[in-house]
Image (tube, rainbow, N blue to C red):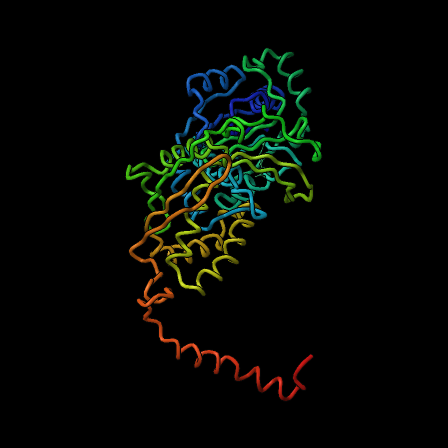
Amino acid sequence: MKERIVLAYSGGLDTSVLVHLLTHRHGHEVIACHVDVGEAKDPEALAAKARAAGAVAFEFVQAREEFAEEFCFPALQANALYQGVYPLSAALSRPLIARHLVRAARKHGATAVAHGATGKGNDQVRFELSIHALAPDLRVMAPQRDHNLNRDAAIAYAQEHGIAVGVTRRSPYSIDENLWGRSIEGGVLENPAAEPPEDCFAWTRSVADAPDEPERVRIAFERGRPVRVDDEALSPAELIARVGEIAGRHGVGRIDLMEDRVVGIKSRELYECPAAIALIAAHRDLERFTSLRQTNHLKQILDQHFAELVYDGLWFSELREALQAFNDVVQRTVTGEVTLKFHKGSIRVVGRSSPYGLYDRALSTYDEADRFDHRAAAGLIELSGLPLRLFSRLSGGET
Ligand code: ARG
């Protein structure tokens, strides 16, 4: 049966083939929808390409600021790093793309939404769970998964049906890019023992090529969100781009992860996330400076849950909203400035200041300015030791 389908359209070979396949082989009407989360592709060229492949309509959504503000910054407030290292750049963009696919479906009266993710990755899970959560009535299609089209089959199909394979040099890698980071997989990287060749990196310099001189950058946060770089106020997307450029120039942000995917596969993933790595380092430091000990300790645990939930495709879930509500409260005092020092692939926090900083020199100093009541510490130990002494007496002491 002929259906109106909104397809997530990247403009690449695979999704162009899918437009053609859904239109000409299955007889559907395809609305191609491209969501710009930082790739800066030319909308005119994308529209022409989508229509040439058979799309009845094309939607371009400029979503960079929305992505930065509503997805990257909440992830930053959660210091979100999957398996301790991956800032979730690809994972964060999927729910946003899903949101716009659903909007386009409503606008065009479509009954289904389609994506080009494969059956082996996490992205199918993220797209589909997001769409189910936002629009349980819409049918979700995964033609790439159904047809199991590999790269060579897609090229053969494109050549057979006159779809432009693209003038750009064929990359040996599979790449996904947005403001928060760049993922690189495939090709020689599939050998986990092999060092990644320099040509897989585009946003970060190698340490050997990084400047010899260190560079200091001051980042100002308000309620856990970065707002200024060296006193210059920038929009969320501008700020991420600026910090990414500086960190990348100094060789900061390369990640090589033996990653556990949702579908059970272990894969080798390379990332370049210079902005995310720098901003998380700064944010985490400021938080330690301004938040209470108990808050810091619980938040570390919740942050890990936040990262896993985003990785698993549960952005549009009650739990993510609840964790974010917790963060909104505890980030009220995460306001202040952090100085980062970049040098030859390293990033260090070298200074911080805040009107809410809980550091009090009169309490921590060992010189004569000391105002700490040393006798109070004896009382603390006396009472904390009370149950220990009792337990030890009854259980026989030394073990
Ligand atoms: N493994 C990463 C993730 O699941 C990146 C996937 C990006 N896709 C790609 N075609 N490189 O978030």
